[in-house]
Image (cartoon, rainbow, N blue to C red; front, side, top):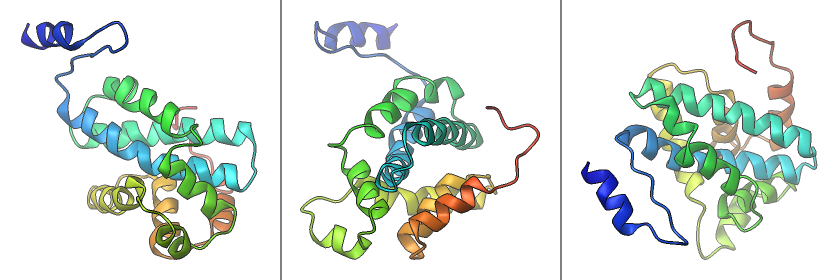
Amino acid sequence: NNAINLSNLISSKNFRLYPSDDVVGVQLGGAIKNVYAISAGIVKGLQYGENASAALLTRAIAEMVKICISFGGKKESIFGLSGVGDILLTCTSESSRNFILGKALGEGEELINIISNKHTIAEGYFTAKAIYNLVKSKNIDTPILNAIYDILYNKSQPKDKAESLLNRPLKDKEFC
């Protein structure tokens, strides 16, 4: 298999490459995790604690799976390095631009001030709008993504959106 041969050629002691035939899933996982990193930063900035962070990441992964499958990707890609692997790193790293953006928002800073004071912009800022429009066109239920979109583009307050997410009615068939 060419993908495995290439993986073996490029991999080294400090770098391992895993081949995938799921271009859609890998691309979506790598992009969407940036939006959820903003949400993880908001949870940190609001000082909601580690249990809230864990719950958020679990639900974020569930949303990522729904989005991926809806666009023809494989859920296994989201459960792999391009999904869970990326989200664990980006959503827990204090050096992640997306996490930093969210944390500042959660601490009450204004978006315009955060953006104007940075030399680089968090990719999740732009990705949130693109993914939001895609999921809206397919009517996919993504409450966390919707909340981040509203915070970034409709000037919603992070604390208000967090409270509305926590007060959503429970659904019968959501996986835990």
